[in-house]
Image 1 (cartoon, rainbow, N blue to C red):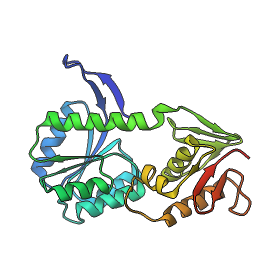
Image 2 (image 1 turned 45 degrees about the horizontal axis):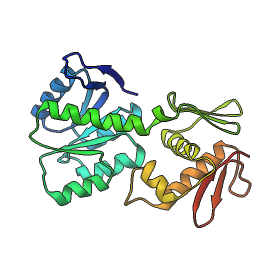
Image 3 (image 1 turned 120 degrees about the vertical axis):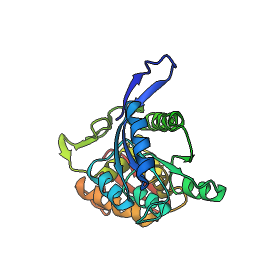
Image 4 (image 1 turned 30 degrees about the vertical axis):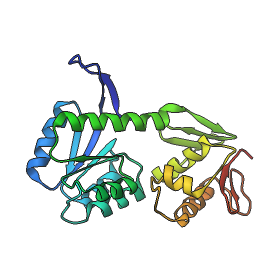
Length: 243
């Protein structure tokens, strides 16, 4: 989670000091943004291409991604879709493209905000803080530990255990289990899961959810034929409940 501290310049804003990943191929823009964001207390890692950024997301997940659309190896839209397939990390698109249809397309693909070049360092910092505040409000900060039967989740530590034994979950598996635990006893549709866990409100496939639920069942020691915690309601969705 990003560190949140009071601003010392008297502006009255709460500053979110975050680990940022900047994906930008222009060296001049990249350098200027790194300097500006570092001066505001953020830790910035940069990548000049999409594939390097995707690997970094998997190896060392940042708090937020700043993504340029004009990358040399992969279109920004495709890069965003790939990021959303492996992570729910907030993404702020930073680009010179100001076409409304493109903005809508990118936001629908899962971007959390869209900033058009040129912009001042204060604006991009404010956007970062706003997105991280929303993510903090929607994420683990709301609920603390969750318990469903012998299943316990610690959103802060990103850890889960079953009957006292730690579960070895991938980031996506944890996010899926966490969302289901937040709605324990309720039937959650696959579309809801794609929207809130994968952040793909208008895309993705139900098969993606089914595969991850199957992996979760295996780690919970159950099967679709003999469920303990994960119950499929045919034609509706999935319900997490205590045995």
